[in-house]
Length: 370
Ligand SMILES: Cc1cc2nc3c(=O)[nH]c(=O)nc-3n(C[C@H](O)[C@H](O)[C@H](O)COP(=O)(O)O)c2cc1C
Image 1 (spheres, protein in one colour):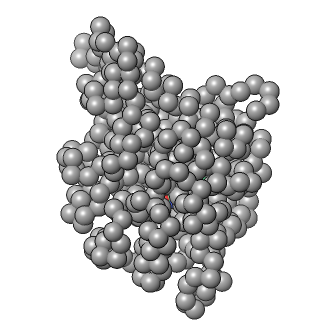
Image 2: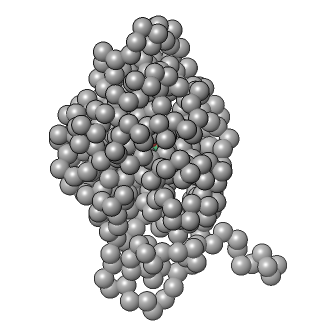
Image 3: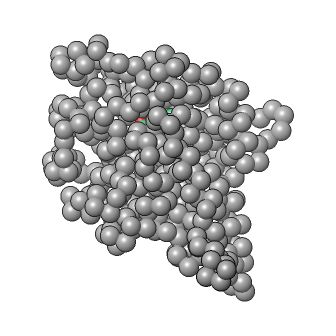
């Protein structure tokens, strides 16, 4: 690390902006159309206030928890996000090293810069794999099979990117995306024709993959996939109680409340706004994680208070990697951990289990008075 070390995630973001080439930076930071969801997802955290309790013994604080039975040191995981190579030459190898050393979860994107088998063998702790429901079921099955064979311990299926969104920064930059080694040599003839007719700009999946994702499948596809793999299935992109109920009905073990960081559909609610309705309907039948705009330890506490078992970070992965590779990402994660630790202590919450809805409020007490 040269010069002054960043002290929060926003300082990492500022530094990274000067290190990642402009079109790539716009790809990472940007969202769909007016980026209303990007802003709302972040701002909603700031509108939630804390209700701290005093004289609770918080001398010993325990931030550890489990996700699908795997212990992590604090309730943070790394989102599936395509091509870490755009931030650092080691790509996801640097990422997995940071996740290992900080003992947090990681979900590898099917659009990674490094082939999934190599990332799995570089990992010393359980990691999960993200894929899609493809038009070609054989491809869905093959990706799941490769993930299982190479040692991933859960399969995350992303549901909210089966139709291309309009990302105006990418259109303006004429950004054509990157290809991923995970799909090399895959696909039938029809897929190849999809590849050649790809219109640049929008999916997180690299150029030759976005057309392969099926806009046709329905919830039954989870039952079919469960019959093809022993891995627990996670549904990423749930934004309503109705879909959370369907996800549980179709056997998923965990739900990620996500709006794809505002990169898919614009004008959705913030994820933190819909988390309570999801948590209420799921009622302990599946684990619940949330992503989108998590930038402070207090955001993590707010998410847990409103029903999440853990949170994920997306764009900050690129910031940490760009600034100082694996060490940068490790340091960025340690900032989140330390902020969560002090926020828990100051709120009178000695461990993750003690964080409940009474610690957050949104309506000013003054509204009842004046
Ligand atoms: C550059 C980039 C690439 C992404 N690629 C994927 C992907 O391949 N699969 C996926 O499910 N989500 C992908 N996402 C979405 C993230 O998993 C996550 O939902 C979102 O980034 C969370 O919001 P945050 O960036 O505000 O933390 C990507 C996000 C970014 C920023």
